[in-house]
Amino acid sequence: MLPSVSQAPTDPEFVQNPYPFYDRIRKLGPFVFWEDYGVPCTTTFEAANTILRDRRFGREPLKEAVRPVEPRLASFHEVEQHSLLQLEPPGHTRIRRLVLRAFTSRRIIELAPEIKNLCLSLINDFPDGEFDLLDAYATPVPVRVIARLLGVPEELAPDLLLWSNTMVAMYQARRTREIEDAAATAASEFSGFLRRYTRAPELA
Image (cartoon, rainbow, N blue to C red; front, side):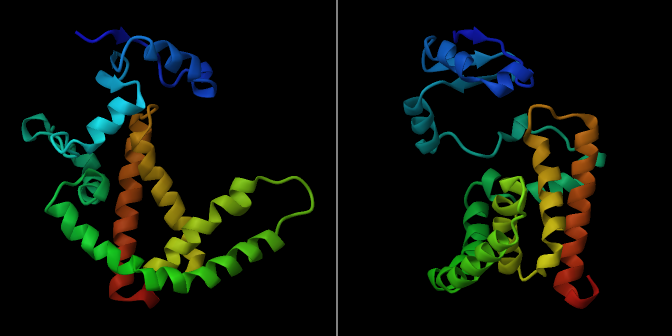
């Protein structure tokens, strides 16, 4: 029987400083049952590393544990069912092979000067006063590079970022009906854009 712990993951004090709670549960052993999530959790690197490397623990849920998809969330699940983060071989292998074609060592080397110029351009555009480094630099760099890898015009990078952030919110502890509906809408818009763009980029 695992020791049971309770800590609301959305509690502001926990969000700002979760480490006292982590210190407390580590003393209970390598595994605890987190009541608020309703799942067992590891508390040590050794336990987490062992599970992640053990192929008996997969990414995909057991078929008998899969719940029917609500129609209103169908567009979100249509996208997420192809996520590399949630697939096992052979599906994972097939999609990973396709993705790797865009990340060859040659392509990465070719991108290096472009990325350097992009970084310098963003730095040169820094305002004189106070500003948020995340918004001005850390966020634009990866999303613009991804846009280039996808062959999408960089002016569409903010749309890609918005769609991505909206869908990723589904995996946060504060998930609500509003977040679910927004994620479904974002997934539908993202899928629609990609379909239009791959068929006729000039019309997307």
